[in-house]
Image (cartoon, rainbow, N blue to C red; front, side, top):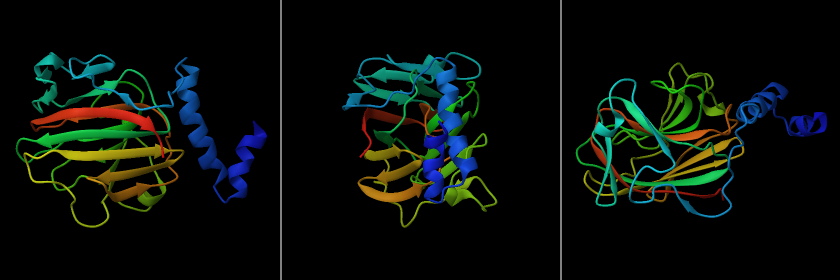
Length: 222
């Protein structure tokens, strides 16, 4: 164990940071849950129902918010909540194809851990219209590019790469080791390095706006 933890230190990574990443993974293992590392492409949405997902809203029936119609996930946006994977994941490429029916807000939470609540510990890949590609830290998570900033947001780099409202967008989130890369419609728009958390559940938010999802897939990180 000491050898494994000392190796990153020789590369200039602070020892405390290495321990933090290690503990974030151990938290799942201590609870008997081993994060899944994909070895091939897997469809997380089967086109029929929410098999493999847990639906959460603080009060009420989440099926009033989330539904599947004609092979597409539909979210009303109200109340606030999310769907999250039953399994935690680590080292993957996540692809989400979604569209707004009118300008609105959502997001993808990665490395989610802890109890279900609004909002859980995680790192958010922002889905807000014209802001896809921003990062938000939630519940105490952190990464190098956020350190020293006064708020929780780290804006994307460059112009918006989103398609017009009503058209489908492809959001790719690559989590590999302690780094997260965000791509919108094939364009790299943001990167987070030295992330405090490196494994966890994947969530998609209901956050005030109606939108649709036609694909959620997972593949090995590249």
